[in-house]
Image 1 (tube, rainbow, N blue to C red):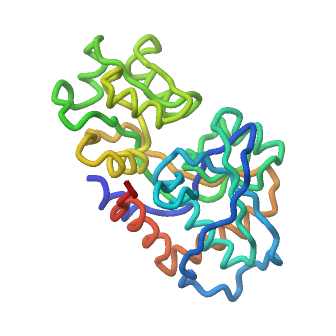
Image 2: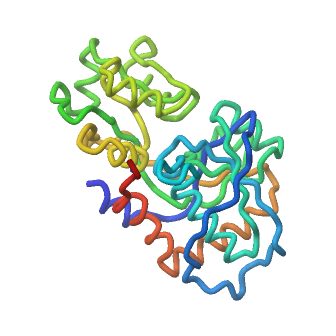
Length: 275
């Protein structure tokens, strides 16, 4: 979230999104047991792991319309991680604003919401290994034909971009179009609504997330071919967390067994949201 095939091949290892005031925690939904053998992996003794998700970042995490419960890549991935490590995932809905401060303070054990690994963020928090390599893209309306790449957008002062406040996507949008031509929203859901309402012209967003919104709004959206960046996603922890090494070991096992590839196919290739 060119595209599906390249990302599937490049899939490697970690994720995120969360924040200030947590809402009610929910237990993980039932999931198939992972194929990886747990022998030789660390045993967390059944401990609860508090996982922050936004529930507004499909297909990583969202509220399923058919069940009114949390669902998505993050839920499945952490259900499998905990099956391998003998832990209990407890998902807590959280906002993006203040996410890194909250993680640094230990309000969550981990933030799992498609977070980009950056050197600046490493000054505040720790990251897992990368679980996915991706690029940022322009998400546009399906009938958009006025521009096809960042050069055209930079040159046309009438084009308004959007993204989510405080994200690397917002920084890239400002770099391309200038601050005066970027509208930032508290959530990507709000940005997509503005796009569909023709209040803005394009959203800068991570490619996996673009694919999620395209699935939810079938036939209404597309993303341009240009990859604006080359980045990695990882889980976020408080610096010094004792979960980093065990979870990295679980991700290695899931990669070796093919489970990470299966999750990618489920959520970024075959994903069909409930209506």
